[in-house]
Length: 230
Image (cartoon, rainbow, N blue to C red; front, side, top):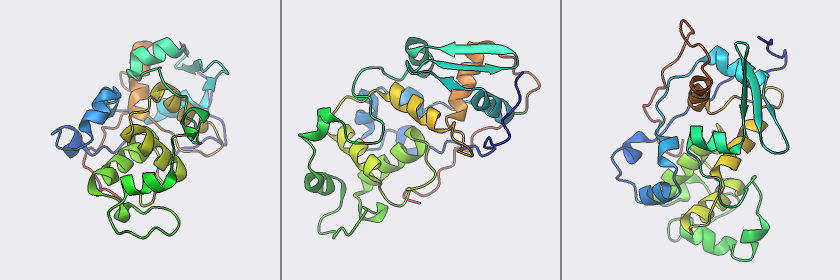
């Protein structure tokens, strides 16, 4: 098994899902998540294997064709887009969003209308939109985007331009290639000292490729949700 690069991150971002909204379906945008086919991805309660996650990312390559190649416990893992879809259940249709406005959406996007869609009435926006300025439901959606889909640890209390564009796309029914977005986020984890993401989904990948997991130390996900907007 290949070793872990000396500049490689040891920080793991554990998923924290607002399960009380998703499991009980008492969330206004539940149908949006369902229509985008995101519920299986958001409801993955797998445990994860910290050391194997680090090996997975340390050996990870993502080609220009977005093929994922790595090696764990002397087992070579290679996933093309179709296999990644079969494992993650994330769709492959729609715009390949990578954090910036895409040409397909540019003519329809209006920042003023987006702010009125996201924020409470009579809120004065100076600079970035804060979580406390959002409507309750859009605040929950923002949390899901940041913490669950993009696996960020920052910007939970305020919305970045990337967050706002994604919220607008979801609220207006734009097709997003979620599989591509997750692969893009995984590629960002290859930067020196970048935190490691999607750890419970990596367990599914290891299982698919018959990587031995017996006797490996694992962590159960803490599904208790921190307050939304924090």
